[in-house]
Structures are given as C-alpha cells and as structure tokens.
Image (cartoon, helix red, strand yellow):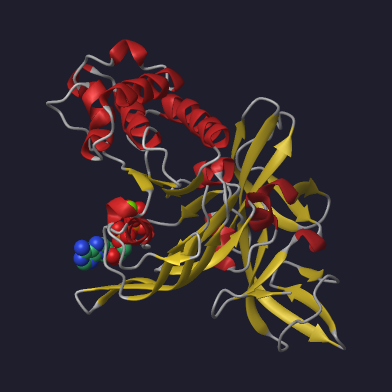
Length: 357
Ligand SMILES: Nc1ncnc2c1ncn2[C@@H]1O[C@H](COP(=O)(O)OP(=O)(O)OP(=O)(O)O)[C@@H](O)[C@H]1O
Ligand SMILES: [Mg+2]
C-alpha cells in the first residue's frame, strides 16, 4: 500500500502546450481513485508523470512521503496497465507475465510460483503456453493485468484498460478489477473518459478538464453537489437538465426567473447580483409531470422497464429530460407541464459556470 501526493503538478509540452496545470491531489493508502474527463484533458499525462514516463515541468509527485520526480520508473514501485495491452507478441502468456520479474533477476522457481498464483487469480492458468494472438481481447487484457499484479507494486496505474473490450465484457471485467484491487489492497489510480465507469469504480473520483482539477470527491457527493457547471454536466447519464434564466434578488431572497417560470430558491444564501444570468441545473430524476410548471411538448418516451425517460421541448426552446418511475404512456407532440422542487436545483453563474450557493 502507498499514498501518492501530487502537488502543483504541471506539464507543458514543447514549451507551449499546457497539458496539466497545477494539479493538487492526495491519493490515499489503498484507495481506488478515478481520474475522469473528456479526451485531451491531460489524464494520461498525469498518469505518465506518476509512472516516471514523462518529465515533470513543475510541481512534485511523492509516493509515501518521498518525492520521486527524479526516481527512475523501475524504482518507483508502480505498475501501469495500458489501453492497448502492450503485450510482447512473440512471447507466451507465461513469459509476458514473468517478464518484469526476470528483468529484476528474481529466482526462477519463485517466478514460476508467482506467475502461477497470479494466473490462477485471473483464471488464466489454461492459457500460459499460448501467444497473445491466440487470445481474445478480454484474455489479453487479463494478461496485461497479471503482468502488473505479479510485480506486487505499491501503486497500480490504469490507463483506460477496458476500453478495447465490448460492453458486456467491460462491465464484467470492471467488477473483477474492483474485487482484485480490494483483495490486493493496493492503491490504484484509474484513468477513464467513461462517466459510468468512474461512478461505479471509484472510491473517489477526480474530474479533470483542460488540465485542471475541477472537483474531487466520492461519486455520489460529486453527483449531488457539483462544484460547477462542467462537473454537473459531465457526471450523470442522462445528463443534468440546464435551464437558462436570471437570478433575481429581492430583500435577500432569491428567485430563478425566465419567460416560462418564476421559482423561489429558499436554499440559496450567498446569491449574486440582481439579474445575474444563470443556468438552473436539475437532474432528470427530480423532474416530474405536474399540473403547473414548464410548458413542454413531448418528443419521445423511452420505456426502460420499470422506469421511463421522457424527452420534451419547452416553449422556451430548451430540452428537458425526466426520469419517471413506472411505464409512462404519452403521445408524441402531446403537451404536458414538467416541474421540480426548487431545493433540488443547482444554480450556476452563466459567465464562468461557478455554482451559486
Ligand atoms: N508528446 C506530446 N507532445 C505534445 N503534446 C502532447 C503530447 N502528449 C499529449 N499532448 C497534448 O496534451 C494534452 C493532454 O493529452 P493526454 O494524452 O494527457 O489527454 P487524455 O486526457 O489522456 O486524453 P484521451 O482521453 O484522449 O486519452 C492534449 O492536448 C494532447 O494533445
Ligand atoms: Mg489518454
């Protein structure tokens, strides 16, 4: 087990592309931390700096209270699993798994024992004599995992290790990975752009955009209490509803207002200047069909069995999605009103996306 500390971590490529900017993050002992964010936001670069595969422009990476900026990758006691497996095609599964141990000049009998043990853990004993090309994608990914596990590293670094697998195998392997990490009790940092994967795998998730850390916390805390518009919008499927309007302030009381509605916001205290342009964010599960509320036209109802997703267009020109219990039956183009409880809404300043509380 190990803890990893990133302080002011910054990467500038070729003196011009800032890929990672001043990231501060403390990954705890035994924790499964997921780095999530859109393509190009700097996730792989962060991981490679922790692994020692990429030079650090500014800031520090520490593992167990030791700064490792100048420590060679092989001496950092971390193991990285890549998206493309990076297996040696001419070697058998056994040799692929054993490679790192052989390089470290471990005793042959011990290598054999460790490889056997790891292969058993991943249900790969039958395949030890095969070459990678004779394996399925899922099996290759297990070899890549085995190669990391067998080294008993202090920290696992995963860079989208499941993205080459089909949806079903991905779900299954995801569950397995989580179980293995708990069983081995090794600190893990896992990169993905898949929000569902982040929500289900992470003890905590760190949301990155444009090289910056936007929020870190437990998945549900981030879902229920997003720090800004980007995080609110990025986490959750289907996404949060965003309704444009203005924040009105009268005598210290706040109201959200647009052409279709006026909604008192008793839960807001800090507020903002009267008339500030804002976005009101409300999760689909908090929207319901009502007598009053936003006037909409039904675009589509998807019955998912037990619950329904209602897609509607408001008279004001924005879309609203409602997640409704039961099998909702509504005709396309019918007119209905949708409403929500004010205290479940988040208010974001339009100019910079910051939450107004
Ligand atoms: N070797 C490099 N030289 C110059 N720019 C680079 C280099 N590697 C990455 N970048 C740039 O740094 C930024 C971050 O890249 P990075 O690979 O870390 O993103 P990512 O979050 O892992 O994206 P993805 O989800 O697509 O894998 C991108 O703008 C990318 O173009
Ligand atoms: Mg990447």
